[in-house]
Image 1: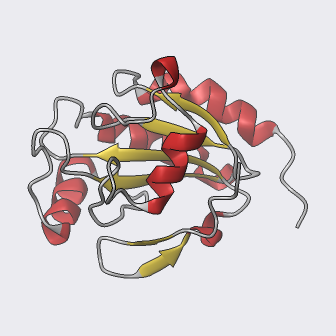
Image 2: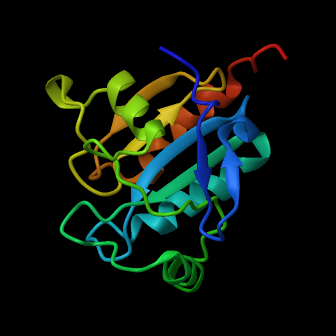
Image 3: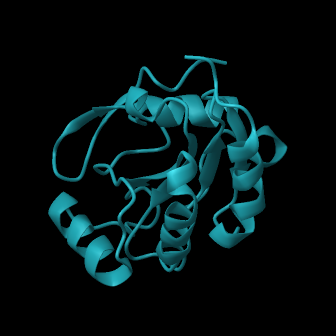
Length: 166
């Protein structure tokens, strides 16, 4: 198991960001889509972010178009949709693949270190969620059907655990 902090990703506005910027935070990393039955989860994800961000928590959203073409928008369209439809303020990144040979390296590592049901590595659908501890270790993978509000107790427990030494 290795750190996630060496990965880099491009934000919706084109900035290259190092995940090192999130060291010491509890993270909920989610693949998103604007045209999915689970898209209303953006509201719950934003609620979690607002509730816990001052305690060292971040939601990181990664749009993906690998599931029934449910993310047809470009980065500008995704940003506009997230802002106007759900008032999303948590960090959103450029569209990535989460499965297959072209999967973003972060997602390759997440799926390897936090397998799904019966050890499956593949992400099955949009809004699969990965909870990562302050130490940068995967804690748990959650299916798309898991409502973000149900994650609040787990997030709170992780936030109450000691921060890693600098």
